[in-house]
Picture 1 (cartoon, helix red, strand yellow):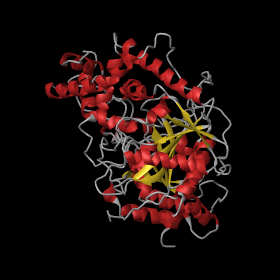
Picture 2: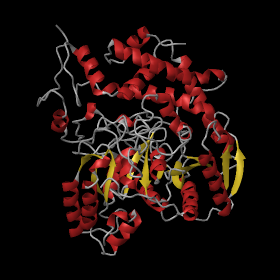
Picture 3: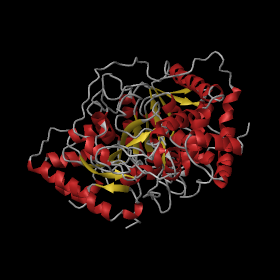
Picture 4: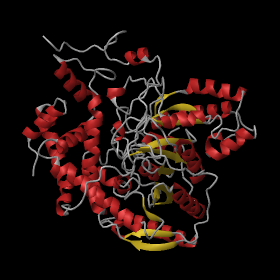
Length: 95
Length: 484
């Protein structure tokens, strides 16, 4: 199968990455060569194989739900792109 | 002492404990040499003045019982360091200052080590040559305009150039072992679940592992001993009994059975790699271990499987970079436009390529054909290893299909770049430990590595095999300081 320009634009939209015509063309080329390589998997029969979900044969643990980080609010807000002492600031969402 | 930076980790520790060197003298030497080595572009962020301060404090009240007493160490810039910028080699994290510390680095500081700085790497650890870093490519100290491997390329180059006595990297598909092989150094990827992933910028969570990189096997054993521990903060951390890897290190491997997988004789493999492998087999026999021919029939499907699983996990992990709470933001007309512009401008080309592959293989209508299929093949690859481990104790393979290549040589062809990891990727898919040790040089004089793959949680055996081989190989890196 081949990945066309329309598909590239569609998955770019899903991944929230804007792309122009020229870049989309190059991406389509790259993705096609990568998928050609990936499609080697089609030659093996995996009908009776269970998918591997974890290499480690362990159960997920439960732990007490408590927080350990203290007084890092300011440090966290300091990393926000639009600096503000109290909130994260984003463009207007609701008109 | 004139050549402090040439000493191994164990030698430095001995000198500190015998009071022949102070932490400050050592730290100063590495800083001075690093300052003269800017051309290699190994550091993204240095921590030199704080490191000197910490060394001074250590010397005033030295605790010699610690495992890394007063030892300065630079780490890959994928480990979050409290209060010190952490970029993952990306523009999108260019100004990110973590308010917390990764468990692995914390373990090092708890044992007396001092943060020297943050080392360059491929963007989000996606690459095999350090060329995808937002902070530019890294020079391999073994020769001008050669890549140092990747993604832990700043780490391998800084280590080989003696800018740090040891370092830690991360390995998702070969990112510790391949750069170690390209720079004539030792690199170990531990069993999945050995070293905590807490505080490591995530790439592919079911594959990522941190591990030591060092000048020799003994140093790797010691550093592994420090960083391998159970951690409640990582839900995939495994609580198993860890060895005292360094004190249990032994060069007695008599009677061990070492498998040679037929399928790793890949088409077009250079003769020098084949010869290196044969030499390795002879050395193993010399050490008194037994060679067994084995088969891992699904090996050729490992790379295609990896290039579905890793991008799928990456596309999901990297969804968090949206310009809202931290990192780079590009303003847009509305929220969605802001997301799209931020991610388009903040991520580099390889990272975007992988996010798109991942998005595609997880998208409705394609999930079964790609992602589920890959998870099934991954099962087969793991079973191959399970089967052979009934008969052998470890496996010997080449680390890489070539030596270090020229900067720019493979950037236009993603698939040829991906082929670099052909011998290392199966190990990550199966969650096994693997170590690369320098084993010889090719006709250009560039280092080549051999890889030893172990059973899960059996780091000690691969360290012992590597230690025995190292003694007989007696590899010396030929580094001329050409960049000074």
